[in-house]
Length: 551
View 1 (tube, rainbow, N blue to C red):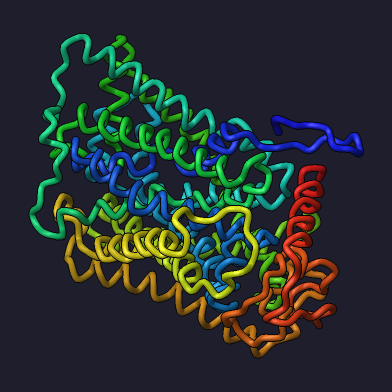
View 2: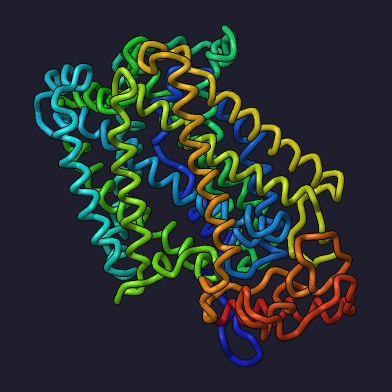
């Protein structure tokens, strides 16, 4: 924590600086994950990333900031969506996060099997094997066993997996990007001719029908995650100014990371040779040869493996921990709520791993591994964008207009509607794009019907599971843990059966003080139209800020 100052009680109030929050945002959002997929668009990928930033990233960040500043109790998007749309949709958001990890890992198994030889010095054989892999099921089974071992490690508790991930993610993300930038500059100085035209007119996307834009849906997915740090808005010295400043600095850094990585791949690898599975390795092979070090790709593959282990252990733990916390307020059977001696919801993690294993073997439905990766990437994109649609809809309903918040979307009510509507429309458009089989890899994804059906079925399974679990929870009130950590929603404290428009101006934190946990009897009820003086609101916000910064 930075920029601390002393209070009257001689205790330090620690504040997060703009730069600290910016780095936290970049760590969550930025990476090289979608760079290869977007490299199909060449220089016009810059335009797609710019459109994604304006139409999706900025609206998401601003809306999340306002929601976090007004409803800062435990839960994040579970809290925000639950306040606006009800408990069922709130649970859906958490389950989407949990399922997207399952799908992402399942998607990674066949690609890991197909690229196994890149961990050896036999580059040419590795390329041939990736293009026509054999014994994929056997090799993939070995990777799945590794992931199950990582799940066991994740279930050994927070201290264990945070120690493992402390350096892994940073090493695996920043080092490859830095190497790409430095060596590309050297390559260009040596007279290398880029594989794409670098003239300004190439920034204009080519239009050959909706299918040519299908992979662009991944741009919106690239920008997801800014809502995760919105909860820290009250730790800023000047929330209204500092959070907005952080958003735009984050936007610039993230945009540069995505654009630089994508354009470098497009410059090094001709479009017809781009392969979602291994083009990044090809880039490192070419760049390594610039310094007479053709095995550079091999070094970075092993660095990436270290990063894989570190990030996987964390990603296996985090969504299950969040879901278990919310689930203890009646949404999950007690069998799934149960924690092991390390305080981890081990059963949730293992159920997630079982689903991942099933998804991994579904790759046999698609002609090749590359098509399987593209298909499931689009599936996760659909789910994640639906997650944000729920957030935007909850915000647009504006059912608690007088509820105090330390940050508001600029432009008043009109600005809020414009910003949220742009984000909502962009999310819907991204989902529509994701259902179009990409023209660039038509042969890889196989039959358009199979492509659409597999995505639709996977999305439907996730959403129907959300609905079924919510309906079951309503019939099993005994699932609730009386000691759960979630405060009731404000509409519950106000005696309402579902979210409705209220005129109360009482801060949410003040309403939840001293209350029983969610799904337990309300101790101190409030009225939907109850008002308090502005001085009381201001005093409560000051007290809350002091308490948070001293904790």
